[in-house]
Length: 398
Image: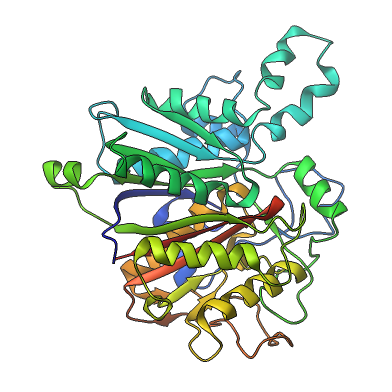
């Protein structure tokens, strides 16, 4: 097995908790964070369910110590909170003591802020600072400056595989000797733009989502930010760092099938999982748990399930579940959120359940893990698939 890259710190904020510990407690107690909209004002607030962080922007500003007048979007603020926790968890006090990078994925970027002001753009120059926050890179720059990172900085926006691709890029940069350590992950906040967009696609559920259920109705959008600190083995040895887990496999593939749908054969997912196994130097039989993308849409669960069946076979299928029934689908943050959950699962030797499942899909003779269970595990595979067919797989080990 590939020795992989050391994970020395983790940070997360989601609808089920404001820290790694709070998220773990919610997963262990099977307490989901799906509710009606309360913070974001939308005409759909009574007709959809979401995974919303129950903190106002004013509260986030206060927690971060930002001036009342600033152009940090909600996406940037939750990013800063999670990244700050990851650095603290890794015991890093001098951020620039070693060559350090920051790679963050986002789809929403500053939309949650700019959608409030773009109609008034010409009325006053004060609104210009909010409009410039729109592009994805601005979010990353805000957080980089807040953290004081002066090294390599990059933004990835490949829809729902963004954070997974950020983790993959970070691991490869450390292997190449370009960085000693890197903070990797992703962030997205709820916005009217994304809610209305997904509603137009008719894939939002008016109930709690039911991944891999035959009667699934669609996804619940969520908001979150999550980051891992990756460090080289040389730095880990030099500073005698604790290692929470390792990233041992990674891959990105594209089935080039449709702008917003995966192929019925799951070609992109199949290629991503297959290549990640090769990078990790593992056989399918060595995967003990799959944290599936599992969005609870008709297309994704069928496509992903088909790809999993092609890789593992029905009889040898590892235990699998989707944790999106806890947090909702957090878009670009999903790969990092589920990376944190994968590492927590390895640490706790626990498989977190696929909530709300009742009926096995008619196309498969397989069903997800529906109850929390203790399980000896060395390796976990985590999938993240984005619009445009951008499919990514990460493999983690103890």
